[in-house]
Amino acid sequence: MGIRISDILEHDYFHEFKVIAGHGGLDRQFQGFAFMDAPDSFKWMRRREFVITSGYALSQEIDTLEKYMNNPRFREMAAMALKLRYIKEVPQKYVDYFNQYQIPLIIIPDSVAWMEMMNQVQVLVMNRNIQKFRVGALDSNFFSEAAYPSRKIERILRATETEMKFPAFLYDVSTQKEYYSSARFKKEYPYPFRAEDFWQPSFSFSKQLMCPTLQMARYRFSDTIDEHLIPFSWITVPINVGESTKAYFVLMESREQIDYYDEFTIRIAVLLLQAVYEQITATQSISDQGFESFVNYAIQKNTPGRSELLQQAGALNIKVQKKYYYAMIRQTDPAVNFAGYREELRNTLRKSYAEQEFHFAFLDDNQCLLMLAAKEEKDQKNAVAKICKDLMRFSTQLEMEIPTGHFSYSLFEESAPLLEVKRCLERCQRAMELGPMLYPGEKIWCYQKMGAFAWLNIPSDEVESMFREYLPVLRDEKNAEMIRTLKIYLESSMNYSLTAEKMYVHINTVRKRIDRAEQMLNIDWDDYMARMKIELMLHLMRF
Image (cartoon, rainbow, N blue to C red; front, side, top):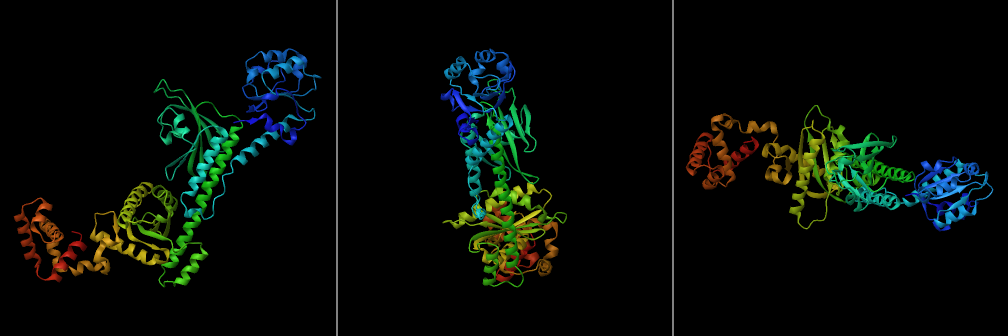
């Protein structure tokens, strides 16, 4: 969108400019200036231009303007302004022409410099665009409300379309979320694009770099897959914070290309979006540091008292009564320093928990505690199931983001306030210790699933010592099927039929294997403690 002739004439600087014809066209918009100081200048003029002239060409060839008026481009201009320097007055027939087509004809004071006049117009355009982009400031505590940045981004996009009449789109790289200025954006492009096609097209295209500083580029679709497709273009600008691209801003040019003054609007929109992402990044960093500081203070060996925790939380502006679910990540590859991948961890969390508040705190270089804000749920069982499902998706994405890492995960399924973070962490650590022994095939170990084993403090290096008498039998490969049958038999409440059904074998085969195990391991099924010892052995020895 350009700027209206009437808008600039209302400014103090232009109060001595005089409109002598075409008053009905003062609402015409212009998109740039053109100079007419040669008899054939009109050949290079374009629609919606504000034509300015010193009158020199008119004084040399009196029919110059008349030739221009007979050219179709005359009716497409926004306005004409001239100085009465080389001609004393404008002939009445020319005034009549401008009145007939409602094209403003303006007399410029002789003292006005061209550069000064154009600078004043640019300042007006910039000020107007800035005023129309009043989308509000980010709350310093916005990180506790995950949806707030999204609303601000949407307001910036809507303001862009309102001002320019071109639909806009933004793609958040970390969350993979798409924002639109309106439903127009999807309607206006005739090809089933992927989001990435707007900055990394997967089809034939041309590219024009418009602004190297912003990396603003115009892409033009030139694929011939569908002969009915009309070539169209769009403008893409990456939103960068430091060396990292946080998002891509896209403006659709499906009907016509933007004008000179529209680029001002794009620059303002991009700067506002960049400011949003800079504040998101800075606030998240401050928030993460605060939570990490609080967590490491709360879990120290000499546990601080409640009053000390509240004082520390107040100093860090942390709400300790808010409830969270707690999960632990452990990285076990000695060649990888997990703490060095904070940005990758944060991006992955934003993808997995785009609409949920989260925080994380590194306990050391390779252990991290996640805190996922708890929502009010009537069905606690379903809430925990969703937490586990989301954590599974997160783990897959994290391993794609950091392929060199080797990760393990544990979860405490009860939500609790930050004041109880030490208790919750201890349960995550307990699940992390027991999980590999009790459920070696699982990816995420949940504390409650450990059952009574969570209460037993058996050092892992003492497990073999406890079951030394059974080791010769257990380690003989010939006994593998027998041990597997025994494990399933105990899991099936010592039911032969159910065991046979689970193993797809005859019930007599199960009976023979159990009898053999009873003899070789010297099992007394009537002795409860002996039976429990066998069950512990089968769990802890990973059978």
